Amino acid sequence: AAPGDSVTVTLCWRANQTTESDQSGDLLLMDSVGRFAVPQPFTLGSAYPTSRWTVEDTVRDQIVVQLPAALETGDYRWAVDVGGAALALNPLHVTAPERTFTAPSVGQRIDANLGPVTLFGVTIPAEGAAAGSLATVTLVWEANQSPASAYHVFVHLMNEEGGIVAQSDGVPADWTRPTTGWLAGEFVTDARALALPTGLAPGRYALFAGMYGPSTNDRLTTSEFADGRVPLGTVTVAP
Image (cartoon, rainbow, N blue to C red; front, side, top):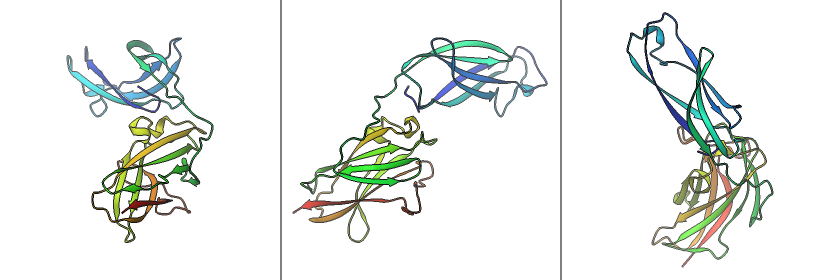
């Protein structure tokens, strides 16, 4: 796993006896020296708590844990603690990404603050692109904080009527850098390939970018970018 990833841990319980109380516990991720990197409290059985269990019931818990963005590369081990007794479980290897805290060079500085992130700059193909080809637009994001949500990036190429003629959506950096794994002050380079349709009319097309929550499609907005779209310039489609 990588910092910022959501990891699902499945625990299967068998009831040895009945109890009138609802038991709770902590799912823990411990580093190599036994420090708790991630404490995740949970109720055994969730909607089917232990007060409802009968002898020899087998109950499955699925606990989703978001790994902290600052987690370092290393070998960790899961543990579960119920009633003060911790039981060591499976290991987990975490590989942290290479991080950049120095602003890279860009074709155009944007500095569009969208709240948790800033669109620092963009590089657009200076020579333009041809219909039926791929046009690569490289965005550089700066994290203002470690975002609590995993946002997707969108890039829209639009005609004069406001219609989208090409777009690219997804997790930044070819699905390798979820925003939940970003650290404050970090720069993330995100190359987006736009597939231009065959037969696209020659001309200049407006380019926009932003971020949105994939579960709601709600964009990151500010007073300056009320619709969540940051103008990046134009792409010229050759005849």
